[in-house]
Image (tube, rainbow, N blue to C red; front, top):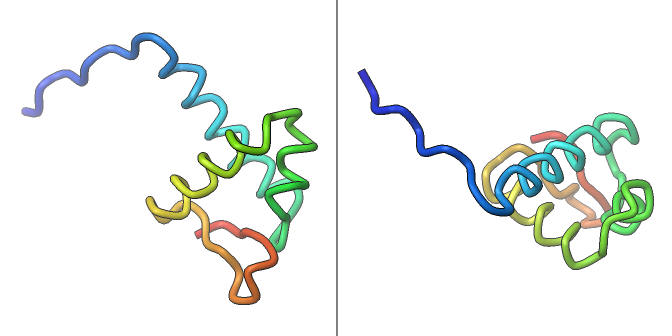
Length: 74
């Protein structure tokens, strides 16, 4: 049996909610949605949006489209 995960603390719950909001926006907008469109739709600072998108791509939840013009589910 694995140990219980550590409880979330500090800013982690907000970061998790923000990442989920980005995923939901990609689903709602469809493949090809841009970081700028996501940032605008979520009223999220562009730097935060890019950081979350890069994390979600690195973890395989999202992919960059081959033409690098947007994102889609991974």
